[in-house]
Image 1 (cartoon, rainbow, N blue to C red):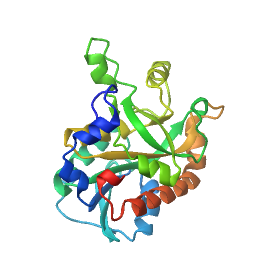
Image 2 (cartoon, rainbow, N blue to C red):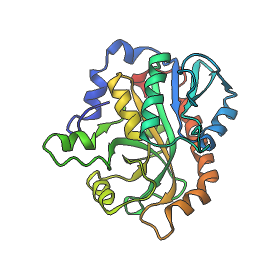
Image 3 (tube, helix red, strand yellow):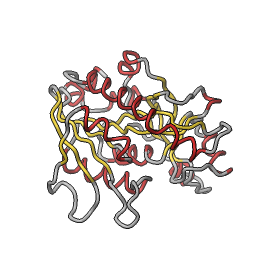
Image 4 (spheres, rainbow, N blue to C red):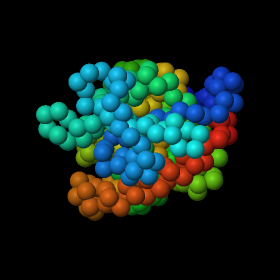
Length: 266
């Protein structure tokens, strides 16, 4: 991961320890915020829920684990809110779960997979699956020199150019905030981020992954068109099931591509 937009992804990847780059990928963590998004992959890879001490006692976080080909696959989720029973979406839970998982499992690679809003003005359509090139926040506005850049928190995803080419995915920039809707302030920030996609977790995962020096890639499937004519919440619910199937298929293809390879081959 690269801390600033003026550092090309290739430089960030080259800066990674060369031995790490050449080591076959063994342990993968897939962070997914919503149970509906995760369940098809859990079933596809025949993963089992792990009731271990990886996470602190009492938290609702969930881990599924299994072995597929030569890979240890872990799907982690923030789980259900203990009071309201809804999926624990958003940046706070994403940060905490990502941190705890990295500390416990020491993965070779993180994949943040999930659904997102897309902008038709940037070429997004319902069901498209994107590999994010960059991630940033759009709701941390701190109009003080340097703090403004910190608030945006622009980071480049791990350069997975071979994955992109081999699987024929779309590529675009991802902007993250803690609200499903888009205020005028958020819209201005998203435009400044030159984002094609809008989600609620990506930049938080990117922050922790960079902090702990774990490469991360971001796969996002478009459930709703943010600059379209339908209400975001309505369109999201309407398309969630079918778009999740597209996401599941793309993640599975990425896993197959990764098997037997090292980071430098992605």
